[in-house]
Image 1 (cartoon, helix red, strand yellow):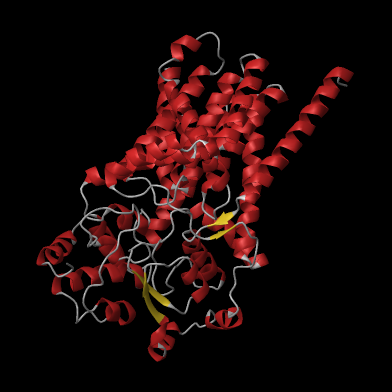
Image 2 (tube, helix red, strand yellow; image 1 turned 180 degrees about the horizontal axis):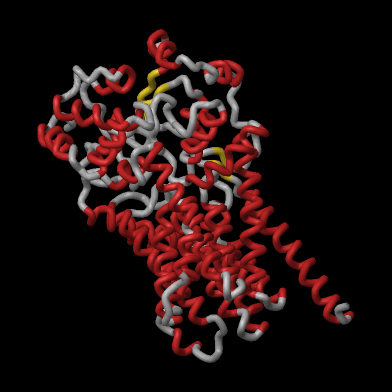
Length: 530
């Protein structure tokens, strides 16, 4: 039995954690947001529940989402409860609570310390708070990272490598580009320990990722989601993406100064690592995570960031705050209290001191001449049902199984738009959308944008090729450019024909090998899309 003093300490620690997590969740809930982009995934969730499979337009197998694990988790709860807005907020809050618990438990220190250097910075970071809901995959990404670092510091030595690989690979299933976060970590750990990783444990831990990639290749015909082609194949020079990425860094500094400061401190750990040698436990592990943050920062800059302020920074900020906390908890308690007091003082003063933020915005905006304080889209602050007054009619339309016949009788079921999130979800499976941004359209996503410069990363407008609307609905490509028609016929074979046909598998191999790329180049060179 524990001594009275120890038992009392544990009770105080538990009470402090419950109070801290309650306050943090209240702050997250007060900023509750479900963005427009989240409903792109939710339409796939709804179509699957209705029996159409993992599809966005029910006549095509196109992976329009970038968060497979997040999408799969929503399916059973949406089938059970039916309100996607409440479901995603509930899942997000559970993931956030689990994240904070695992991060705090991994530090194994006095409650005053982790309260000051972990909970307070997380609660003050807008990147973490805003994207702990949002309807996007960020809360699950945070939770998987928290599980990863808990194993990194507290896991059993004989099973540590398996669990680290498992959580990292699940994070990649949740969002594939977190590869650029975890790869530097594993590389550093292998070098620091001067031994090869356990091959057997690594293979077992990577099975979820391998299984999803194989499923994606067979079902969709491609390993990468359609968004990869739509967002990165806009026909713009790489320097424009990098300029937008640098602009996105300025966005973080202006919107989430505390998060940006922690990212800078975590990365600088690589430089002042020698100064902490002998004073800081788990220094090699903390350095590895800091290197992962740096690798992911470089990736985000390279791809141009995102149109949603802070979306691509939430993992960086969460990881950086944990690294900084892990260093500070090994220092004196008074220093931790002073740090927390400074952060709280900053939040009280910063809203009234705007000159430096304005200067920062002007500095980074001048790179691309585009304002960086973009507003979040979607429903914000009110927990209301997202279903419109016509929900009954919507449910009726979603029951159509003979979709092609319905589409022929109702021309209005074809819609061409660049806002495919909330509108696409509420329209139901019977409406076929042509997304002019290319995010949900397999052909347009592979065509270059018609603008002269990259205005908004990830949202690049395309013109509809001649005859494409009819071809998308009926398969008749007679009205299209000859080269583009042949290219689309191959693509359509992959996304609409029988999954197990031999001809489809041959086309998948040839298409991914670039055999038909010359047809697309011929069409682009013809000048028709411009």
